[in-house]
Length: 610
Image 1 (cartoon, one colour):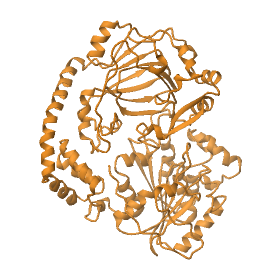
Image 2 (cartoon, rainbow, N blue to C red):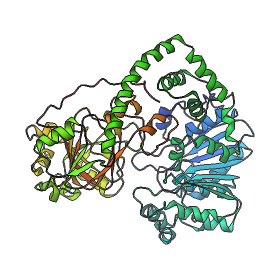
Image 3 (cartoon, one colour):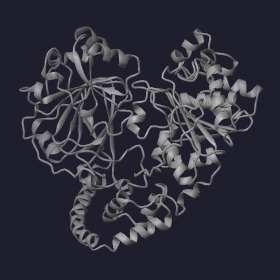
Image 4 (cartoon, one colour):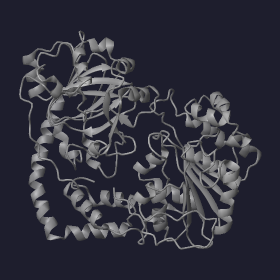
C-alpha cells in the first residue's frame, strides 16, 4: 500500500543552544547521523512527542516513528514538536542517551532543559519494546502528561523477571544490574504504584512469539502489572506477538491508534477531504484492482485505510473508469479472465479427489509412478525414510560444521527480518563471515536476520564442497552427476521465514536436521496470488483477509512439516512459503533424470496487484 507522508517545511532556526540538531532532510541522511538525538520543531505552544527507538540486534538502532509522526502531522493539518532519541548501548536507556546524559538522571536533566526551551502545551512519550520501557520510565520522571507504549517491560530487574517467568531479556538486564544502575524506579509498575500521575496507553500482543513456550505471550505478565495501575489503559491484540506496532502497520491500524492515543483525535479525521490526494501511484493501483475484478466498494474501503477521503476515492475510481485507455484494457483483460477461469475450474475439479488427501507422505515410490502421479499430475510429495544411509543424518549439526569447517568463509543473507523484500533484493544484502561465527550466531538465538540460503554457491567451492561426501543414496529419479552445480545448502535458525514464491524448476528438498513447515499453493491459482514481480507474491499467508488482496480468500493452501530423513518433492511452479521450526539443515536438488529446464514470462516490476 502507498504511504502518503506529509512534506514538511524546513525546520525553523532557533537560537536556543540547549536544543538537539534538526531533522535531516531525507532518510539516507537520517541513517548516516552520528548523533543519537534530533528534533523536528513545531510552533510555540505545540505539543511535544518524545520517541525512544527500540532494540535492533543485527544492525545499529534506528530512530523510531519518524515517518509515521510526519504522516500524522499531515493528517492532522497542524504542527507539533517531535524529539527522537535512540540508545545505541541497548541498555534500555538506563545508561542514558549519548549526547544528552550518561545515566537516567543526567538525561532527564537535559530533556528538562529542552522541554523548558520549547514550552510545549503538553508532553507525550512514545516507544515500543525497549523504547516502550523508556517511554514510561522517562515519561514518569519528566512529569509528562501521557506515555504511549507497545510491548513495554514493567521491570528491568532480573530477579523480578524470573519471578514473572519472563527470561527473554535476562542477559540484557544483568549488565545494568551488575553496574548498579537499577533502582526502585527501574521497576516501573512498583514505582508508578507509589507515585501515580502518569497517564498511560499500553498495547500488548497476546499470541506467543515463535521462541516462547505456553499459550500466551510473555508480555502479558507485564500487561497485567500495568493494568492494575490508575490512569492506565491496556489494549490487547489477540493476533499480534511482541511486535505490536508491526502488526498494526500490516493491519493498517497504526495511524488510527496513534491519533487516538497521542492526541485523543477521532480516527475518522483521516477520512476528511484534506487527507492525501490520489497521486499517480494510487491511480495505477485503482486501474490494476478494477481490472482484477475488485468492486468499487472494496477499493474505497482499502483507500480509506490508506488515508484517502471516501469522496476522493469514489471520484478517482469513477474518473479512471471513464478513460478510453481503461475501457480498452478492460476488454483485453476479459479475454485473459477466460483463461484464468479455465485454470481455476480445472484446479477445483482436481481438488474433488484430492480434498482429503492433502500432501501425501510415502516411502519407496517407483520411477514410473513418480513421473505419472507427482511430476505430470503436479502433486507435492513427502518421501519418508529417503535418507536412511546418509551420513549427514548422524553427522550434521552446528557443532559438526563448526569443528570441521571452522574457518570457512560463507555467504550469508542478512536483513531478512527488517526488510520484507529480502528475497527479491538478496544480492543487496550479502554478508561474508566464517562458518564458525555463523554457528555461534545461530546457537545464541540471535540470528533470525541471517540465513545461509539458496542464493549462495558454497557447495561449488572448497572446503564446503566436502559436505557432499555426507550425501547418501538419492531417490531413483535424481542424478548424482553434477551435484555441486545442482544442489544448494540451507542452514538457519528457528523462526526464519522464506516468503511466498515459486521456483522455475522442480526441486527435491532433502532434509537432514530440524523441522520445517511448508505451505503450498497450486500454480493454477497464480492469477489470484498478486504476483507483481518475478517469482514473488505480495501475499502473507499469515494475514488471511487483507483488504488489498481479496482474491486470496478463494485460494486453497496445503501444509506439511518435514522432519529429518524426509525428502520433499516440489512440483513445477508450486507456490510455497517456509518457516523453520528448529535450527535446520538441508540440501535442495534440481538434478533429475528427466527434463527440468523451463522458461517463464515474468511480470513487469512495479505492475500487478498492490
